[in-house]
Amino acid sequence: MALIELAGIERRFQLGDTTVNALAGVDLRIDAGEYVAVMGPSGSGKSTLLNLLGLLDRPNAGSYRLEGRDVTTLTPDEQAKVRSARIGFVFQSFHLVPRLTAAENIALPMMLAGIAPAERARRVERALADFGLANRADHKPDQLSGGQRQRVAIARATIMQPALILADEPTGNLDRHTGDEVVHLLEALNASGVTLVVVTHDPTLGARAGRQLVMEDGCLQHDSGRSAHAAG
Amino acid sequence: MRPADTLRFARDAALGTPLRTALSVLAMSIGVAAVVVLTALGDGARRYVVGQFSSLGANLVIVLPGRSGTGGFNPANAITTTPRDLTIDDAAAVRRAPAVKRVGPLAVGTSEIAFGGRLREVIVAGTNHDYFAIRGLEIAQGTALPDEDWNRGSPVVVLGAKVREELFGATPAIGQLVRVGDRRLRVVGVMKSTGQGLGMNTDEVVIVPAALAQAMFNTNTLFRILIEAKSREAIPEAKVQALEIVKQRHRGEEDVTVITQDAVLATFDRLLGALTMAVAGIAAISLAVAGILVMNVMLVAVTQRTGEIGLLKALGASARSIRLAFLVEAAMLSAVGAVLGYLLGQGGAFALRQAFPVFPAYPPDWAVIAGLSTALATGLLFGVMPARRAARLDPVQALMKH
Image (cartoon, rainbow over all chains, first blue to last red):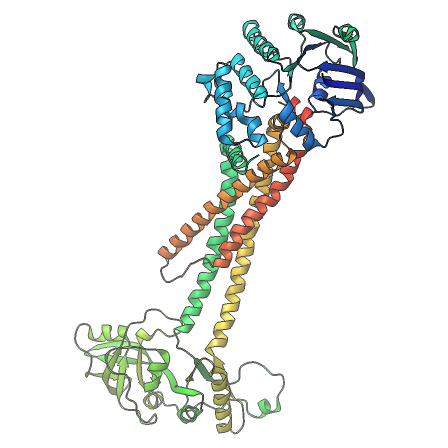
C-alpha cells in the first residue's frame, strides 16, 4: 500500500531577484514500511523534500497524498493534526526544549495532542525503558550526552505511534559509535513496521537503507527502488 | 492542549528566563502599587477633610454676616456698604423657625485668663447652653453653660481641657474663680479633650455666655450663628427659613450668608475625589508602561524561542495552542505582577497609616479593582500581538533558527 504519493511536486524560493527551483517536478511513491535514504549534495532539495513530506512546507504545484488522502489542500491546523498523529520528526540538532526534562520532552507531543496525564505518564515510562533512558527521566537536555539526547528525540518522535518517521541527518552531530546506536534504533523501529525516511550525507548510512534516492538540482537523479516498483 | 498543560507550559516558559520575568513582574507590580498607594493618599485626604468637617456637628447650618459672592452692580449695595451686624436677638428669632432644632450664637475674641498667678492668652467664645449640643462638645467635669436667657450673661466659664491643665494642673478647677480680661468668673465645667480639629481647637478656648463675651469685648455683634436643623432632610428648609427671618429683621435686606455644612462638605468631597481620580490617572500611566514592558518581554520571548515554536509546530501544535500558550504567559506575568503590586500597595498604605495615624490612608475599592483589572487587561492586550506573531511563524524558518 502506498503511504506517500507525490506527483509533479514543485517548490520555488525567491532569493532576491532569482527564483530557485528547490524541487522541480518530483514524482515519488513510498510504500508503508519502507526504509528510504535521501542523499545528494547540499542544496539539491533533500531538506525541502523532507519538509514537504512532513507537512511543514507547501508545494507551489503538484499533489501529495498521504495514506491516500490529499494533504496539500488541508488548512494549517488540519496539517498540524496529521503531523501530530501520523508523522514523527528526528532532527540533526535534536531540538529538545532545554527547560524541560527528558520525560517532559518525550511527553511533549502527547501534551500538545491533549492526551490525559495518566496515559502520558504510562507511555513515557515505557518509552524511557525502551530507549534505555530510565535513569535519565528527570535530566535536562544539557545534562545528557549527544547520544542520549538523540534517543530522547527519537522517543519523542515515536511516542504518538506515527506511521512515518522523518529523520534529517540524525547522526550528523554524533560520533561514530553513538551514531550507530541511533541508526540501529531507527532501523529497529522500521523493522516494527514504521516507514522511515532518512536524509543523509553519509554514504554508509545511506547504503543501509532498503532504497536510496539521490537528488540533484531539485530532481530525483536516481531511485534504487523504481525498477523494483516498475517490476512489481 | 489541556488547560492545565497550557498553564504549566506557560509557567515553565516564564520561569525559564527568571530575570526577565522578574523584571516585568516588578514593573507591573510597581504600577499597581502606585495606583493603590496614590489613591489611598488621595482618598485618605478626602476622608480626613470630610471627617474634620463632620466633627463640627451634625445637620449644621451657619449664618455669617455679610454677603458672599459678587452679584455685579446692585443699587442696594451702593447705598448700604457695610452689612448690618448679626445680634443675639437675630439668633433668638431664628430659633422660632419650624425646621430649626437648636441655635447657638457665637461671639469670638481673644483675652487673657489668670488663676493663682498663672496667666495665658486665650480665645474666648461667647455662646449659650445649646452650642455644646450643636457642636457635640462633651463635658469632662461640671456642667455646660446654664440654660438661661441669652441676654443675661452669668459670670461663669467652661474651660478647654488644655487651658484647665495649664492653669490648675492637678488641683480641682470646678467652683474656682478665674479672671478673664477684667472680670472674675466662676468655673462651672471643663470640656473633654478633642485633639486637633479644623479651625478652632476647642482644647484651648474658654466658653462664656454670649452676652458676657459681648460685654467683655464691648460689642453687640455675633461672629456666627450656628443652627442645627431638625433632621438631615430639614437642612435646606432651615437654611431658607433662617435667611428669611434674618432678612425680615434687617429690613428686607439680604445682608447675611447662610451656608450648610453639607454644601461645604460636598464641595470638598468633589474636589478631593477629583484629585484622587487625577492621581489614579497618573498612576495608570505607569500601568500602561508596565503593559508595554510585558509586550516587549513577550516579543523577545517569541524571538528567542523561535526554534521552540517551530518544534512545537512540527510536533503537531495548532496555531491556537501556541497563541494560547504565549497569551497565558503574558497574562501570568501581569497577574502575578498585579497581585504582588496589590500586596505592595496595601503594605505601603498600611505603612502610611502607621506613620500618620490621623490620616485614613485606605485605598478606595474602585481604585483597587480598576488598578488590578487595568493591569490584567493591558497584560493581555499587549500579549496578543506577540502571541499572534508566534502562532504565525513559518515552521520551516522557525526550525532553521534553532
